[in-house]
Image (cartoon, rainbow, N blue to C red; front, side):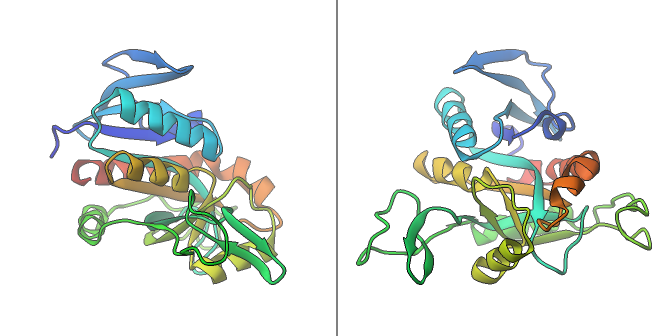
Length: 252
């Protein structure tokens, strides 16, 4: 398993900085720079895709078309939705949902699977589930992972961050609203929200149902102050996400 090529995608340079090893050189494809290297001893190809679903989808499609990846990992930061979680906690997706694809109805927004007609009479099942056996391997891989205590300005008592497994919601929006945070958590059971993972899951499915592991550390809590918290806590969140990414990479 360790000899198979793993595709690793991040949206921002701060996220990729803790992951990328370009010892094998760089290859330019479609205006993106793909780096050959290793993560946790596993051969990998890395790319910084930029923020948003289109950027992520393009980068993933070019990667899977050009390089013989057998699995994909997205690693980065996210906004927290689950009130049980805090800044610095890491969420590993068991399901990836594109919450902004669907139909605007008088009664509210109805989510559909991307690509399916968002119309009455069509199947409205949605989400990209991570296989159960892979989830179990991921849980075993992160058992006992140790994080540094958070500084006092993040959480009173300098609590230790933890790893959680659950759904992650993807949409082309930076969530800066307590009302939207509650809606996304209540509607989808999502623990975190971000702007890329669901699009990469859609591409991975198109390329032969390749497994996608989406690793996200909470840089903010998607509330009224999330625009302030995001920049302040991005370095810590990127580092914590990378710690988990290095643990899970060999077992994907």
